[in-house]
Image (cartoon, one colour):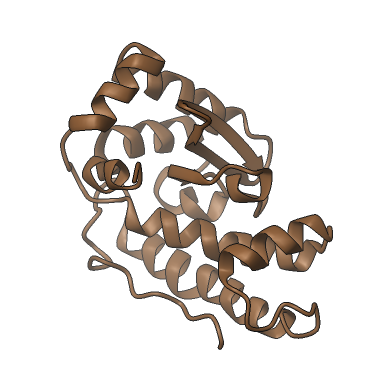
Length: 196
């Protein structure tokens, strides 16, 4: 079964002014779509046909297959990215809020640590909020890698810091993009549901 580009859960202009229409059209319709096309062209030759996206990510990483890692990883990463954004969606609540307070002290401390990871990721990559053991933790990965490839089973949120994710809106100001994303685009209710 071929992998497919998921539809965005909102209109292309729904995240403005923090993420513009053109950014979403290009990022989703061109970049993400290219990863899906490439992945479908690679899986059979890698002996991974019929496997789930999670399995393809993990097995491609174990085999050090860069084409699979980057294209499967980017498909997985973007599926998560689109699903946890909504403009001005409030603050963490319930169990997520309790876990953030327990593991980081405050939401501001989480944002500070998350921003530091995202901004310091050299070149292309991602920053993540994950559950590692019984603790929430911030991590970062290069290129198309994701926490699943590194043995983390629960990823709550991730930000794309490839330049195509922000350059049209923020030019070379990655810190401004990350701060705007943390303050205005994280859909905390969707993030909380990923706690399981």
